[in-house]
Length: 176
Image 1 (cartoon, rainbow, N blue to C red):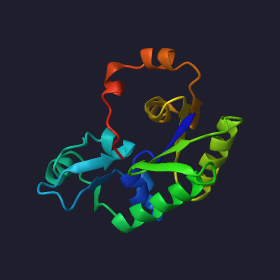
Image 2 (cartoon, rainbow, N blue to C red; image 1 turned 90 degrees about the vertical axis):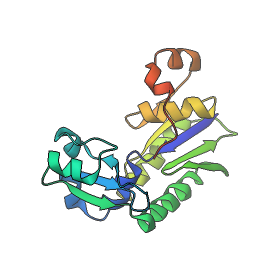
Image 3 (cartoon, rainbow, N blue to C red; image 1 turned 180 degrees about the vertical axis):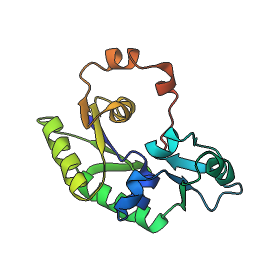
Image 4 (tube, rainbow, N blue to C red; image 1 turned 30 degrees about the vertical axis):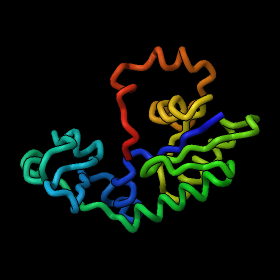
């Protein structure tokens, strides 16, 4: 069995983790090393104002004058990646840092997996991190389950789970 632990909106969490006031404001993150500055992630408040991923900062600010635009916080990203991996290693020694804010865990013992992952999600929330987890019999299915989870989702019938997903979900990349 496998599990994926996901920190949704990883770049946003890295920026807003120690700045709680930013969480309620329209907030967007851009990659300052890209040749063309574009919005990578945004929170719900920014999306409600009409800001979209891929917009330039100028376009985003034209839609939302009080938008807070921040560059990626790479030091903070590394810190929360380390926190994520530390907590994942509490579950199993077989861990893969799959992508930014995503790790995959392989289990040899499959008892009480949902409870164990729920504990890890709770521990991560004490670190001011929002996490989701998916459990399935293969890494791809647990990755998709984590994206669909409110907190922890265990997939017992992979074919039925995958069949019910919208086709756009199956095209999803391992993005932060």
